Image (cartoon, rainbow, N blue to C red; front, side):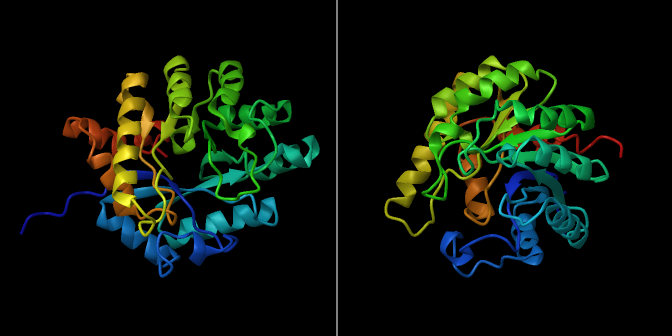
Length: 284
């Protein structure tokens, strides 16, 4: 019997939290198993070894965000990687207090920011200590971009161009812009092309598979991804993500697998780029 291939792929964009609102409405399937077991089952089916678990801004406190992330990290055997989040809308003192609590967290891989869902720009000066913390700890800064699941979100805060200033000011910080900047895909591609410290992910580009014209939606998303890659000119700057449970892992992987690229480049998007960006192969 042939050996099972190693699970070396990485999904850089998944959610799993008791504070997720309206789960059945928002998931790709109302019956999705929204648990560590359910998520790992989907990851295993696509040979994915690690997933970056993005904590939600709707958590009641920084302490609870850390507690939940540590709990899920343990339950998954270290496969669901820990992140933290904060908003400058709470004021500079709240940002400083959050960072003080993060200092003791050992296994963080990223900070996630939610402009658009919350009314702030990524270049808000109150976030400078967050970027300095990320630089000091070698963490990726992940920034929501484009459309928001919440219709009350304000898209003006989540345009890729708003990241350019902070990417220039913090050249030593790696920024990962989520969702290909959808709908501003060309704008995002220019930002990634211009700034060597900016990356993007493929997450959250598709609606539920029950919506009308879903197959056409998949092909459109694949064309937009291919065009972005051509504009960026470097396959190493694009990483795979699903946005589970909004998309199934299988559907999100198939979006990348269907690209007209050499197999080794598709696998780099699904695996190698994220392993390098999040330093998953580095010694502990």
